[in-house]
Image (tube, rainbow, N blue to C red; front, side, top):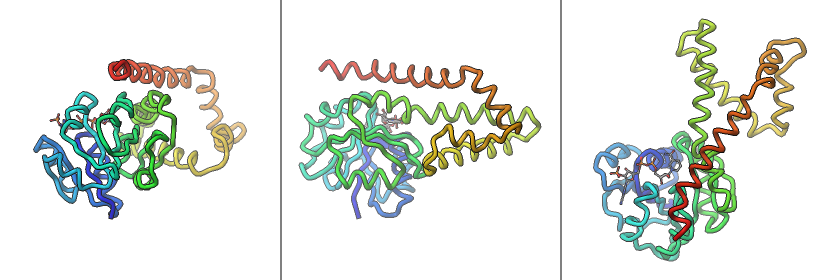
Length: 258
Ligand SMILES: NC(=O)c1ccc[n+]([C@@H]2O[C@H](COP(=O)([O-])OP(=O)(O)OC[C@H]3O[C@@H](n4cnc5c(N)ncnc54)[C@H](OP(=O)(O)O)[C@@H]3O)[C@@H](O)[C@H]2O)c1
């Protein structure tokens, strides 16, 4: 069994712990200074501790604290050169972490869907080992990118779940307006997004071919699509991703100038 230590058991660390626990193939240690955070993940970890030195026993160490806490954790963390350190801190360059540890460092931008094994993640090519690829595969899908694209990934898949929740909510509201009860509308909207996403991932056809496949001539779908094609809905999504990307760049600046 691969031993994984997750340092920082908040939103993202907790989601990763859930995803890893579901696989049943990882021995997981949850590390956090906050007893409440440890209590909240106790059911998903093989052990919990506030002692960061325990990470020295792991094959893979995931650094899941806020960017501002990264240096403090690294100062207390003595890892070996045969260990992998996965940093998920938004905006913190791989090199900034690598110069403070002997472990091989890979930077990833995960998202909260790790919790259900549906994470979308981007990983830097640098520092990516087969052991890390296997772990990312176990909790979702990942792509390998150059680190210069991390701000874009932060916006697309890191912030992306919030944008998707927003669109699902709009679809749900439309269902409620049409008379569905809120629970039914939420199930139908969310499952429709889930199914459509699965189709895009598994079907070889392009997205526009897939849209065509749902639109029969003079049918219902084409009436709705005409409204979307005439709107700025796609531009608004691009703008939202762009704004998140810009903010990611701003937040990263403090580390870039070191
Ligand atoms: N949330 C997301 O959707 C998301 C997506 C992609 C990447 N990320 C990245 O993931 C990281 C964590 O984000 P988050 O939203 O999960 O934050 P969070 O909920 O605040 O979790 C961070 C956890 O780390 C703990 N911590 C702080 N200093 C520590 C230390 N020295 N040793 C051990 N544990 C310590 C915190 O405890 P205290 O509360 O006591 O400080 C907290 O429980 C960030 O760097 C973020 O950029 C998050």
